[in-house]
Amino acid sequence: MANFVLIAGARLGSWAWDDVVPHLRVAGHGVHPLTLSGLAEKRGVPAGQQTHVQDILDEVESRNLRDVVLVGHSYSGVPSGQAAGRIGDRLAHAVFLDSSVPADGEPFVAAWPDGGAMVRASIADNGGFWPVAPAAHFEGHGLTDEQIARIVGGSTPHPGATLIEPAVLERPLDDLPATYIKCTLGDPEPSDDVARLLAGGHWRLIEMDTGHWPMFSQPRELAQVLLDIAGA
Figure (tube, helix red, strand yellow):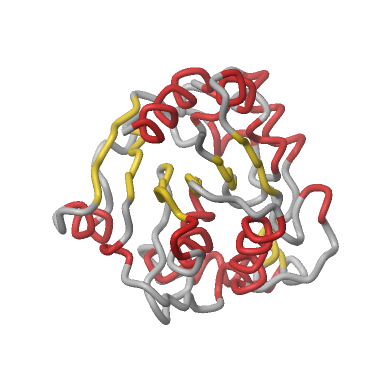
């Protein structure tokens, strides 16, 4: 039995996995969707980058989880990639779901084309938070209007410090047993940093023909991909 620890991307909480969880549980696995500090039901809890890493470590350790398949989506690839290197033999596999990957000493926004200038300005203009994205942000990703409304309605402003504080890697990423899931709709190629990790020999690539939020657009298909990874 695997223990899936599921962390959704920026602005989202554990609720984002509601359509995926039943498919994993019916297969007999432990499933632990996690809300990071400052988001959803934890809104108002102060959070920096290492707070989010510690959230993941606390989830694994407090539940005494082993055979952990750690899934980080979008932004959450950054804290989950750091946590994966710190949970030792509890980790079975790290899954980066169409996500950013951490670089030691660099913040989440460092890989953005403008170096994160627009995100930093948005955070400064919104009281230290990255504001909720408008519905138009989710168009072209294989989502229905109802699904988009659900994402927007459930989103909370994201604690800005988590996006601009540096990652701290205690284990090289390319040393992890890892899979990168690339959602190819609209953006078919992995980023350069992900491509380098894939070329190292320890990581493998799986493609999904959907947009950036597959837990909404293709939850059953995503669950099967995760089950296949756990069984590999």
